[in-house]
Image (cartoon, rainbow, N blue to C red; front, side):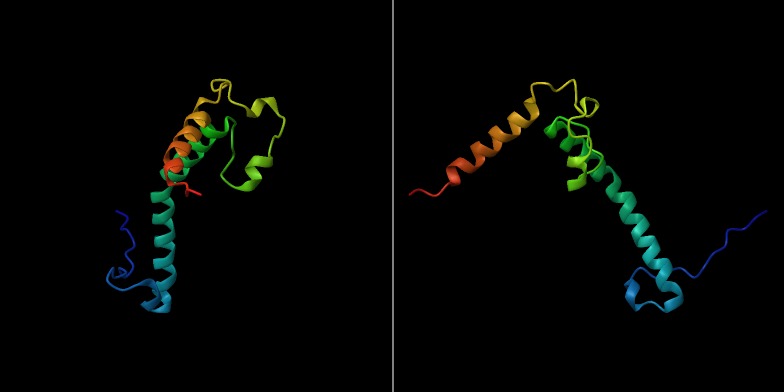
Length: 104
């Protein structure tokens, strides 16, 4: 029966930068993996909401995503032709910020 190789467990009470050099890389790698896993659903939801707001398919949320496929009809959403999501968000922002506008 194959046994799982167990390395010395990284103590959770010590930050990665206080660990010995041979354990530091493993701790940082574990942190990055855990952050990536924990943030995946948030990134997906952010891109999905951005696509609904912009009315087009976005590859990501960087400035480069806005430039990809300009004028390409395949990049537009057919289900959101009236752009109601964008209109609703703009109306909500206007209603929230209008009372906070400084009076002359």
